[in-house]
Structures are given as C-alpha cells and as structure tokens.
Amino acid sequence: MESRRLLAAQDLQRGLTQSQVARKFGVSRTTASRWYRSLSGKGLESLRKRRAPGRPSRLTATQLSDIAEVYRAGARAAGFETDRWTTARFADAIFARFAVRYDPDHVGRIMHRLGLRERTRQRTRVTTAVSFPQFMPEVSRAS
Image (cartoon, rainbow, N blue to C red; front, side, top):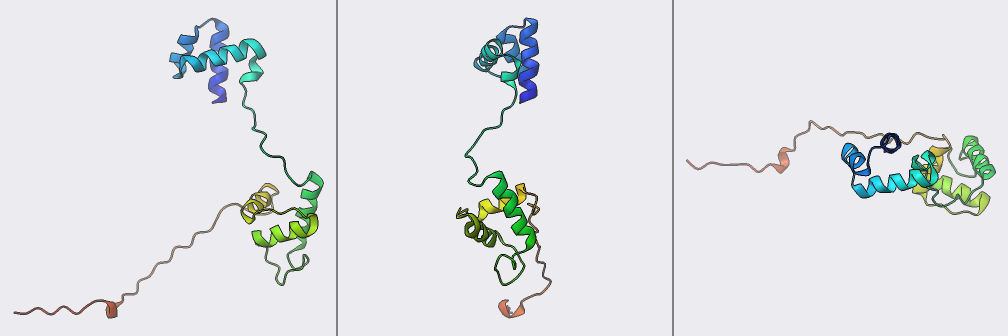
C-alpha cells in the first residue's frame, strides 16, 4: 500500500491528473485527491506508512527486561512447583512482581515480542487404524 501511494505521488508530481492516477492505481478519485492534498500540504513523508500507536504498555522498558530475566530464571525460581512456564503462570509472575494484571493470551504476545518463545503452535494429528466392530450392527438378510 505504501509503495502504491509513493508511486502515485511521483505521478502526481510529474503532472498526471488525480483522475489519471486513480485509474492507473485502481483507486477512487476521492483517494487520489486525498493523496494529492496530503502530498501538497505535508510532503512525501505524509504518504509513508505510519504505525498506529495503540495503547501504551503498562510495563516500562526496564520492567519488560526485568520480566524477561524472571522468565529466563525459570518458573521454579518464581515460586512455581515445576520449571514449565505457561502464559497463566507468567501472567501471575508479572502481577506478583509489578502489580500489573495481564490476560494470559496477551502475556503470550509479550513473551513472543521479547523473544522468549516461538508463536507457532504444534498441532498433532491423531490417526487411528482401529475399527470398532462392536458399534457396527449385524446385518442379517432374509432370503
């Protein structure tokens, strides 16, 4: 999308009309007009992709690095019976340390962003070659 806007901006700067740009890039004339106004008013940088800010993190950068260290030390060091981290356990550890409560689903995203775990899920396919004759009714044919 950004590359399309930047190419359209070059065409607009070369003198193509907004209608020609709209046709060339398959967008509405309103969109081409919006691009033109943005280009004229704020320059080429206004057409570049910007990251949506979203809600700010409830943990500071220092706290995030601290929680990464807690993770690396292991779940047992954080007071759990086993050394296996789950998102629910990690959420509890964050709450115990910083009094900030996160949903376990979001904690998984935090763990991924900090490089603490892969985001892929392993799917196991159950294959069975067992037949269940006890559930198949006996068919008797009357001659």
